[in-house]
Amino acid sequence: MSNVQVVKEAYERFARGDVPSLLALFDAEIEFRLAEGHPYSPEGEPWIGPREVAENFFTRAAGEWDGWTISPHEFHEAADAVVVECRYHGVYKPTDKEMDIQVCHVWKVGDGRIKSFQQYIDTARLQRIMLR
Image (spheres, rainbow, N blue to C red):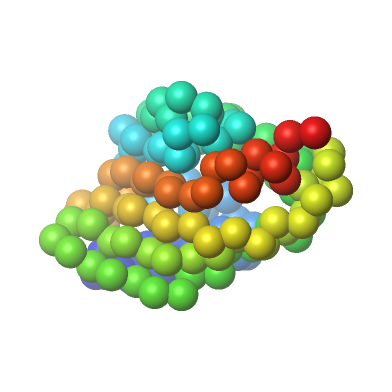
């Protein structure tokens, strides 16, 4: 499977809500980073390994968002990296505010496994949605 195919498979598994299957694509030592200033990880420090990603991100997000989707539009491959231009959509339940935000993901893939993930997003806009 090509690096782009691995990343596309990750989005497909997310869209199905199959988080265990998505986590199975991750390397045991994946470095998963949200954008600096993201309310879930303001310092932008990485979560290491699928368990930390599940606990700090997927478990939390599952309870706080209604209808959260990721719409990937463009995939750009360069060596071991795949850059994906996307949009996030959904409603943040604690504030009842709707999200429609442009986002960019940088995935590093090796040996058919996702080695790292980096999110880039307008965190000021995201904070206006998520913070009261």
